[in-house]
Amino acid sequence: MHYGKISPYLFLLPTLLGLALFRLIPVGVSFYAGFTSWNIYSPPEWVGLDNYTEMFKSKPFWTVLQNTLQFSLVFVVSVCVTGLVFAVLLNAKLRGIRFFRGLFFLPVITSIVAVGIAWNWILTPQAGILNLLLEKVIGLTESVSWLGDKKYALYSLTMVYVWKNVGYQMIIYLAGLQSIPRELGEASKIDGANSFQSFFFVTLPLLTPTVFFVLIITIIESFNTFGITHSMTEGGPYNATNTLSYFIYQNAFVHFRMGYASALAYVLFLLTLLVTGIHFLVKKRWVKYQ
Amino acid sequence: MKNRKYVKNLFTYLFLSLYGTATLFPFLWMVVTTFKSEGAIFEIPPKLIPDKLFKPGMWDNYTEVLLDYNFLLYLWNSTLISGAASFGQLITCSMAGFAFARMNFFGRGFLFTVLVAMMMIPVEVNIIPEFLMFSKIGWLDSYLPLIVPSFLVGSFGTFMLKEHYMNVPQSLEDAAVIDGCKTFQIYRHIFFPLSTAPLATIFVIAFMNNWNDLLRPVLYIQSPELRTVSLGLTQFQSLYSTDWNLMITGSVVSILPLIIVYLFTQRFIIDGMMTSGTKG
Image 1: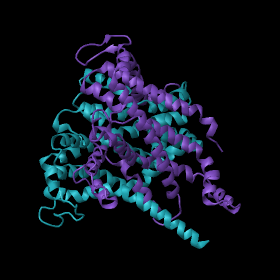
Image 2: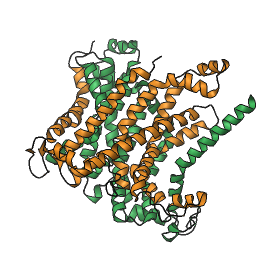
Image 3: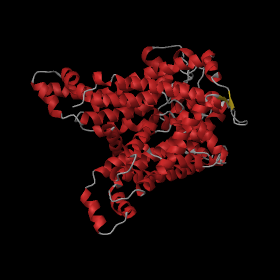
Image 4: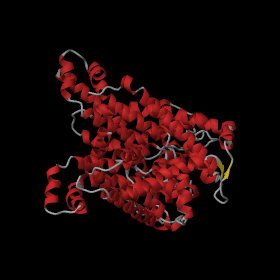
């Protein structure tokens, strides 16, 4: 109260300036740019809905959109399930558990390019360690090109993304689990529930707010696929691993089609809004607040 | 009863170790590879003990990457950029967090909602206008586009510090006012020093995010001497994609500084991440 009328805004000045310059204005500009034909060298020219009609008629766009949805689905399910399973294990009171917590978070802080190179090296068909391992363990003799074969490329890439990112979700789940009093689980066991029953009927319902939060951030993350794709496949072979995020980069900064890329960016934006929006709408049905 | 618990713990360890191996293996395999000569890399079956370990020329890959391929310079560039960008977040986030937590003003709730909602917009939507803006004002091929956006806004940091400052007792603030502190002094001498723990977390997380960023360096940096370590690695990959021993060594060099920082600040980072989850 005693801070006067102006000083709050002075304190917020850098943040508001940054917000306006790097978030709000760009969101408006790219909406407008979506209706123009624009390379960097000449000024934008209004073309109405041309970018959108071209997009819906082009075959690569539909391939990329399908890849994006497929990637997103596999990524979100893998991350949310693996994250939860290991968060539950990490919540155990065991010797050395802090070591595992630290270890599982390690890929999250690792440079994207380094992750890309390391996995390229592991997945390479000739003398790649994964193929050699598979040959030893299950006697696989053909050398699979994990990233070069259209059948496997997208899934291989998805798994690398999961490996890189899942540690974060694990920690968020763990935070949620730790805020649930242990006595509740113990009480249910005294009432005769086994570990699985106690998890599914006591712990999980109490964890739903965290699950909801994890789902939202994972969905947003799943549409943001530049780094690893750029350092591993660059969208290939034949667009097999190209996703919207990377497709936008290619159109804007490889082909310099800023208008078309802006229109694509808005499709990505709407897709994110739509999928997260649906989750907010059905939230009441399954998320239980204490 | 005791027996069952023993079996359960055993299984927990088993699963943790399995996934732990999957996590650790790529890192170990990379480190092993850095001590191999070019010929030893494609040996079948691959050897776990590298051929140059504790032999003359053991550090050859490292000296070649660091000196001949300029990675020492790239490391320095990345440190400079990440340091400046993260330092900025300490100031701007704490000022904004202070205002949001302790001041009443018109539009407070709305502005805070906008700040958090902006985290949900994909970077691809903003990056094209941002690129054009920076090229108009002639900032291309400089560090300013890599530093300034992160310097000015940190949604995560602002959010975290707001939570922290809201828990500071009112009496402390009142006492400072009675002692004659002006608004800025209250922030500078009372609130800022009280938040060293969250500030450290924010600094480390911002440092890592900037260090690992790839999109902005790819777009904005052209001169070889300005490259960040991520960008240097990407360029190296497209030029010498068959020199696996050097590429892997470059990767190890690029992640080693972060891993060392992480080992010492692990507690801060994980606790910081955990608060971001429970309060969200």
